[in-house]
Image (cartoon, rainbow, N blue to C red; front, side, top):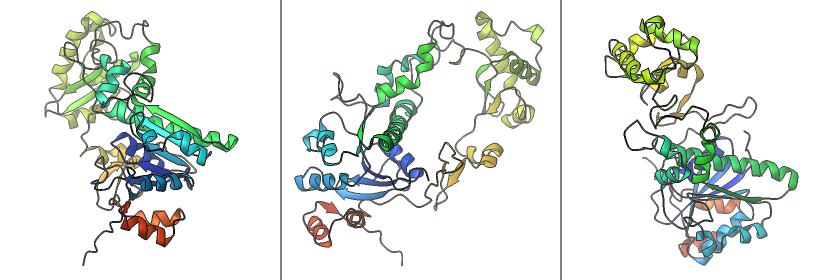
Length: 382
């Protein structure tokens, strides 16, 4: 795998950090999740392929243990607000001085400078500050976020993973580590570069929800079917639009021009009436295999079993037969091999991790006695 042999220390946090660590683990990195004492584990359920070490970083001895681990690690991933790691004497200046090859990855909401760097926030706040949230939501309603996918996972976890891989690649030439400062406001804004670059180009001239790509166009939206399911339509190009009309049984010479924006609301009503006359399965039989750009809106229960996704092997199961998406992208020579094992219990691997990083049995015993570390082995099922 592409990241085989890369040692990553992931300080436990909420969804963006665990997702970043899971991506690295899926592609071969040895990821250790450093949990807090008493923590319930990864509530985001994104610890596939990782091991867990419970370590009390608030005590000087615990912080010293992490410094020692970082001296032999390739990557440290920390998810805290500005100043938290510095208070623990674990800032990048300290750790990079002790290990100049370390990739010190900081994943935060607002970044480590600026007036909001010390305040709390969530995906919706980062998305709002990036400008992207203002573009989302139907016409006449409040803006609303697409779950917490864009800022937390796209602009946060995935951008941070990219930064780590770039820093690892740069290290192959320079021999030096560096700080990766990934924050979700800038990450979400960067993901929206197309929106910024196309301002004034006619794509976003109408109010929110009334434009070509935000649900305003009758040929780029979703429609309810006779069985209360949905079909997604994305027939932008004229040749694809004609195939859409053919499938719907409509004639172009009896309709307004495709790009007549003033007629879009009425055309949407006409399309909606037609889609409502057949079930989702019936529409699939009409449009599957065509270039009309019409596809079913699949539920999580349906997606793994759809013919195309089965052909691709796009979803995988773990040892408990729970579905999840296969890691992407696919690499022909060093593809990801995601673990099928259950997520680690907190502290399940504390002692073996410390041994691997050079701690003696006496040191491990003392750390456990002082409750600097915790070791929790799973109980055998007899």
